[in-house]
Length: 398
Ligand code: NAD
Ligand code: MG
Image (cartoon, rainbow, N blue to C red; front, side, top):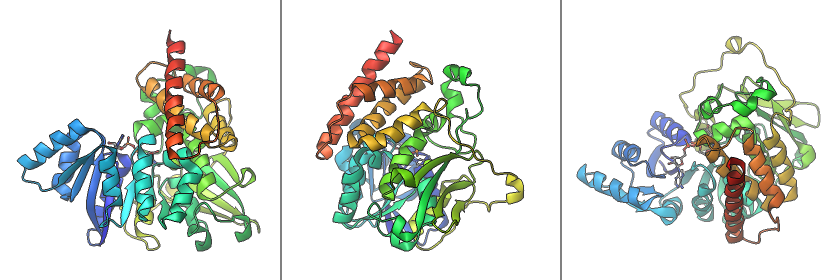
């Protein structure tokens, strides 16, 4: 039995992870669950899964969960704050940690799992975007096993040889015959929308992704293609890819989850239904294969595959992310933080859809992008970018 901690247990990835575990009850045991502040959902999960620990980011939420569990006679011990999340990630009894907290908040507890040498199933893309080389160095220094869950990175990983799979971030693509990694993206709900109308799209329209069901933040990021930008940075670190080795291509059907092109002209693609249970099951069981509860892909139902180049006028956030990737660590940390603030402001109705890119661009231009020397200085870069993004939002809304 593998003992698992799930960070972000109440979210979209957390829910899919529990559904895969439910299909394989003899192989996995839920050791600990963590979430932000949703006490009711966490209570239900604890009563169902009876984990040894539950952790809530918010101390007040932790106190109410503790009381509710006591009233129900459930022995789950409740921890709180970033220390609580880190404690259940590094606990000696844990084999595997699913890192599925959304946003920068995921960095420290994910790092705790890495530093404890766990098998880390990495759904949270922001950790690598924020900390890149620091994260990769820690994986090797502490002997952690890193398995990408983000569907594109999981697809690329599946299309690469074992010699690369076992050396995340330090592999040499060219020496294994790889010429290019092709990162596919659906283009989001507005890929065919008239450019002039993009100013007016609402949060509800932006969240309604045509193919995937995901949390609100990543859904907005998919609509701006910032998600693909963050994934570009994530892929650069995971696969030690150079600019020439990494391309983004729009594939509206979301059946091909990404591809790897080899020197001899071969292209390997991983395909499947757009259902995160597939990459989650793959990462949980690697190198074995388990039941994920996903219907087989029916090609006659899919019909056609189409592809197109991303247009940076439609997706300015994608361009900002690709450029930031080659400016350096401070730039991607800054962009990630600014974007989190901008997306939240968009979801709250404070700014328009196209203003997300405006805020991100302004913060990148104004920020002082000197190379951070440690995680603490990265977190300072993150804080500064958030303040700058708030300021830009105020300017835009006055
Ligand atoms: P979500 O919004 O559905 O869930 C987020 C989870 O994180 C919730 O359980 C929430 O309680 C928890 N959380 C939020 N802030 C927290 C904090 N400060 N401390 C502790 N927990 C906190 O998000 P999601 O769609 O499940 O995405 C999770 C992560 O996985 C994101 O980084 C996203 O980019 C990545 N991802 C998601 C998908 C997908 O299909 N949903 C695909 C690829 C990658
Ligand atoms: Mg993805």
